[in-house]
Length: 438
Image (cartoon, rainbow, N blue to C red; front, side, top):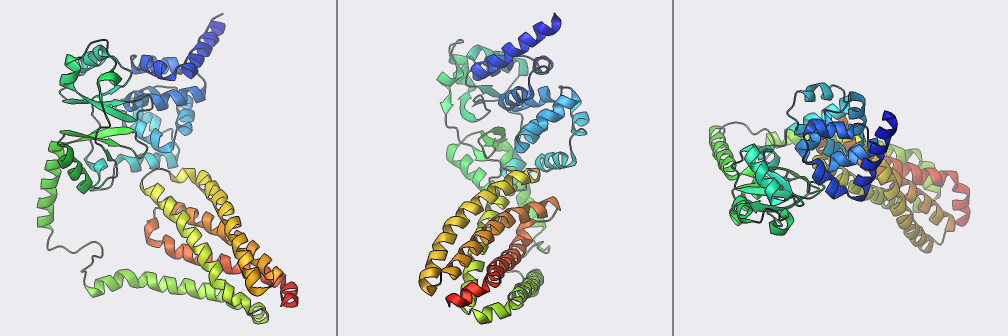
């Protein structure tokens, strides 16, 4: 009888969340972490992950780590990697260390990377102890929460059901409002904010423009992560100025515009030599098909077209992937999703560009076989280039290397070699048709 009742309750909770997610989260957020985890424990995994995603970060993290170990691991893997890592970073309970040990090596690596943001960014200055409420909360509930927390903040930041920053509210406005009013009706919309990876100069500029004492910091998707106090910013700027004065006579760790010539040579020459080696590799591929090119000289004229187009395709994919990794929109363990997306993009772009190129080659050479070879080769080379442009930064990042330093050299080699191989290989395969058409 107990199991039947439990199953019935579970079903009702699940359906209530599906029908009224915002109201459900608002009611659930009034409970403590232990109570929330107990409510979530028997729900379907997908429902739990959706609820965890919508809860405020700290409450989501504390509730998540209180789930049984197996359920914790499954829920964590279902959540977006960046989101799941941010949730755990909000946890301060004793449950955290034990739960982190359950994660896979790649998940632990992601979590460690997100613990510290690059220097001179908003994330490095951020404080996660903010006073936050939901737009659907009532004034009386927020006031009671402030009393319980003994808060001394001048402003409260407002988020929606998905933790997106939607407004802010001065405490004095809250005190004068009707107790039964919803926060959404009295809050100020579109508060000034900065991205977690915004440079320090931008943070200073926003502070000077809006004259605020606390600046909210958001993830790239708009999720509220923390805030920067004006006093903390001033202290950081002063410390940096003192540090810069102390290190004026020290050697620069990287090349600057006015670095000594020999220093710049030492930084640049190794990569130039590597690039030279890769150029010889590409030339060797072309040399392997010397006999084919001697029979159809038009192939030599068209080689730069194949190499150039595949190179641009790979560069686009590489730029998007590197930006995603740098901004932490994606993690290395999402490589399957990243590569499959680039496969589809490369295929669609490849087919369109290849058809246009094939028609141009046909009208230029009056050779249908040559146009067909160009079409197929261009499609193949652009698909390979698109996948390679995404794969190379992911591989280098997983190996602990800086993708910005060597990705372009590796990508150039891959796109040139594969472009030449696909074009000249197909031409060799159908050499009889090409020579007859000529």
